[in-house]
Amino acid sequence: PVLRRGKEVGRFSTVCKKHHVRMTKGTQSFGKRTSKTHTLCVRCGRRSYHIQKHACSSCGYPSAKKRTYNWSLKSKRRRTDGTGRKQYTRYLSRRFKNGFREGSQAVSKRASATTV
View 1 (cartoon, rainbow, N blue to C red):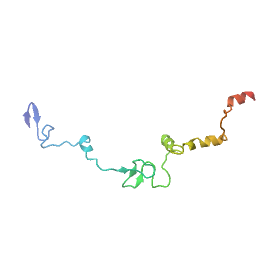
View 2: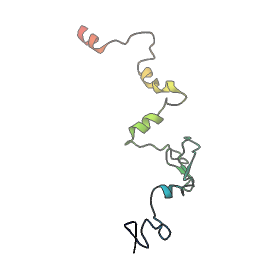
View 3: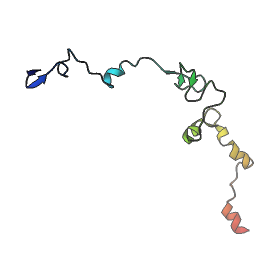
């Protein structure tokens, strides 16, 4: 080793960049990420269709059934009926249960219980 400005400069030190290139996981390796793994899905429109696997990681396309899991309630809420163009279908089951009533106030359960 040779002393230069009070620092020991060896063959593989970080100061002498001629002989040694540091391999990192950071900035240098990010420049090599040029290929795309996922592209747009035909069914859900998200960038989740794996090109080599030929399958969507979001909706499960080309599987006939849509990909859903009970452990992800938020995901189910985002994709359920009435979140797209037909937003009226979101409340349709509740309106059907009450007989499609309109222009009237719902009878309070407390008030009906006290009068009986």
